[in-house]
Length: 283
Image 1: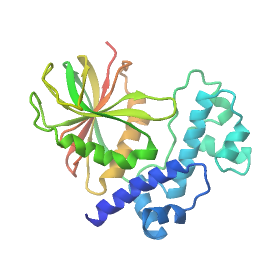
Image 2: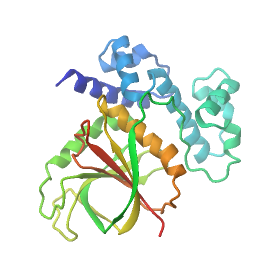
Image 3: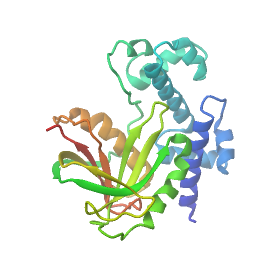
């Protein structure tokens, strides 16, 4: 295993550790000790891969969880959220919340129906290359694996992707790409993720693969071309920009059906390759 692969695994393991102990006291050193790296090396690697420092990520995740609690429990008190998130006062929590989401927490309940809010982060040093297009996609039959994930078990995701490799070349497979889509979200913040292969409709499918068919639809597609440098933070940055900038500024009306990502090279993306992010359009 290369040093970069080891650091990537340590990074994912650290995120799982943070999630499992999100509201417990923690420091860069305690997280680094869990990862097996010195605090200085771990901190540099985490910032490079995640796009923000370790403790900025911890504070951000606590604030995101506070939003989730406010949306699912209208009776929760802001002062309780402040102390649960590790702030010394409600005022400090309110300032951090407003910086992260653009609104103080007291306004969240006056904004109408809100399903989620995107936390603001520092602008990336280099903008990802993203190109928008529209595409008509016929019925899309996928045969894939399904598993439930949250940040607490992201460390298991690479192995989950690798399990799909055993099924490449199955009878009726139509292309070499891997398709990924969250097929169901849950109130506890977890989601069911499918990674699959495109097959002929009706083709025999071995267990434990599940079959999902997306109906024919027009899609707006955002192609993200990878540049030289670390791949992981590029993908994270592109996903966030698509959600916060490209989709809101698009003139397309989105349908209430499943979006998906298409990885032409599977999870083994490299500089110069691309990922296509598909969002269905309203008819």
